[in-house]
Length: 67
Image (cartoon, rainbow, N blue to C red; front, side, top):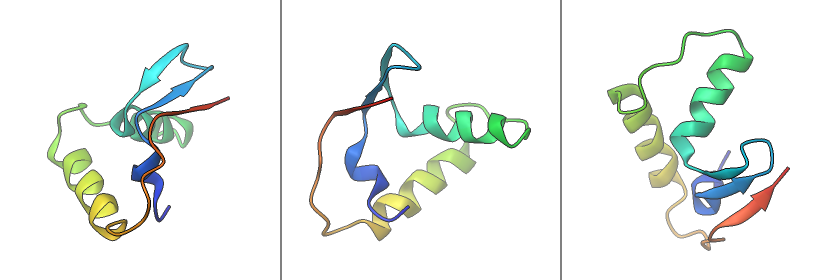
């Protein structure tokens, strides 16, 4: 997942809209049948911070599109 934060926000055809990294976290939680936290929770904030910190120095991809 190193560098994943560099490609968000991203358009996903499944969503039909541009989505944030937190929206992706929520989707991942649901796929493994976990109860997702609230979008503004400390857990998602801390996870996004960690992934962003680990991706420092990597090139930014900017908004993209995924299926």
